[in-house]
Length: 266
Image (tube, rainbow, N blue to C red; front, side, top):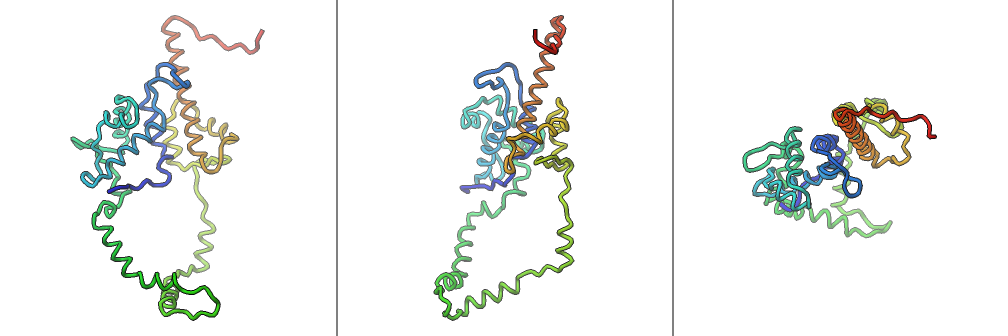
């Protein structure tokens, strides 16, 4: 098996943002203003990609056998952070510890058994040879207005007409009345209930609805990547709220009172 299926939208799964938030252990800012000990959304997706890639091996189909130490070497990262990400993935039900390997829980739901079947290529070759006559006849047909239709192409066209579905007017009317049901909708931001619930769980330190309203008019959002941009912005706000609470706690424990911010400058 030389490849596996990566489904569109997988990187936008809010569960990854939740795992990144839970796996973080922030302490101080390092290079590039990044928090030391923090785990980003891209870190979680990278670990997940390495695990799926290993699980695609036909010798252990659906199971990741790589250790956190190995994955950390591949990603040039810290093994303890990889282990923490894997631990949070197990809590979220993405993987299951199966002794010497990690089982990708929904592997068979997203990866087809035929993908790992060594006889698949041979069966596809037989299918191609069986239909080669039809394909060749259609491809080699001269492109003129006076040519006669070959028997093969005529047969294919007639078969296509038989298979063509005819939608009744009532069904068209019904489809036109279907409206996507969103739990939250403002500007370009449109969230289903499950995504909204996941974000509430992932970012408990902020007022989610207020932040969404503020981000709805953000000029950096576009139709293609708005989901990831909003998720990253909310994660940043949530981290800042955690840091602020931690700073206040340290000040209180040290006998200091939080200094109120003046309304004006002298």
